[in-house]
Image 1 (cartoon, rainbow, N blue to C red):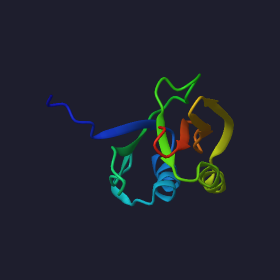
Image 2: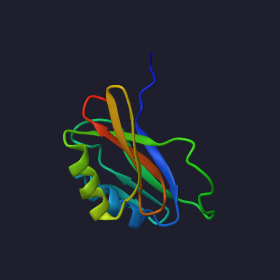
Image 3: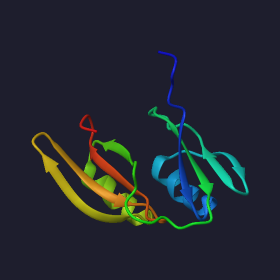
Image 4: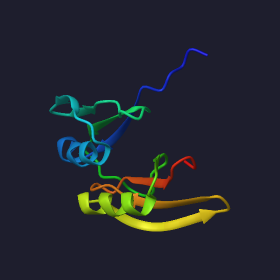
Length: 118
């Protein structure tokens, strides 16, 4: 198969502001910064890059797609992300998997699960 995931692009009102949150959250730097689009470096742990694209309309309703992350210490990571500006929406579990749902500073939903369960 020739298809490779390269980047997930998030529509937002303020790309530079949102990039500040995600660079701190992921421990990466900005790779490119244009007035309407910011692209982050690929995370050292792998996975796709994140991009933030300015759009004129606000987000309405629930995200149709979101990013899932894993962490050794999910609870500590959630506390760190909340300290950076995320909002915790809830905790969930099914047998063998626990995760926390959060929103970034613009209300985009993402999840943090225990490592190996995302």
